[in-house]
Image (cartoon, rainbow, N blue to C red):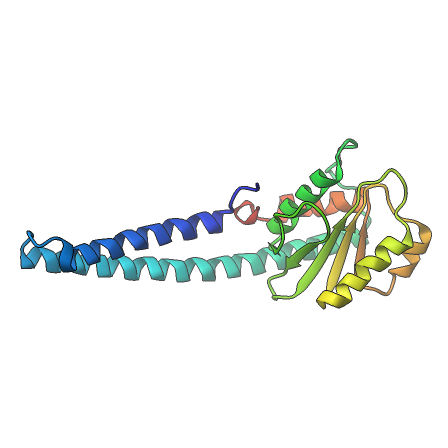
Length: 215
């Protein structure tokens, strides 16, 4: 099972502290009859301040994460678009022995680092559903095969895009794609990512992305 992200860890910590303050407040209200009225009032006041502080912390963290995701996404995707158009040679080299589940896990790490939320990262098969900072859906297909990916696989991805009302899709296939598939996506919002394009995405995630966002 994937480890929880930094955002989830912080949220859980603040919620746990909030629960402790709530319990302390209840104890002060009735469970501790042997403490003085002044001490009880002080405990209630401390609990109230603690609860308010934790709730404000959750609101602050939520706003901080939304802003961070948007800034990282805009910066990183602009850098990737530029490197892709320039056909720059990536520094990252994809391992030849990578199996499909490992390719999918790499995609989860990279897109989360680029500022996307992964809606179904627990799964082991099928498409990845991404939520970009503009709250629009994008899809990722991962296929690790020794031969070029044919058009019907890409067409199936477009059908899923229409079903999910996705604004863009990425097809990760290190082996590459047939000419028919490459020609077919020219005027569509589908990015065919072969080994070089995957490398460019990874390079941008490492240079412009954020480890705080990584799943």
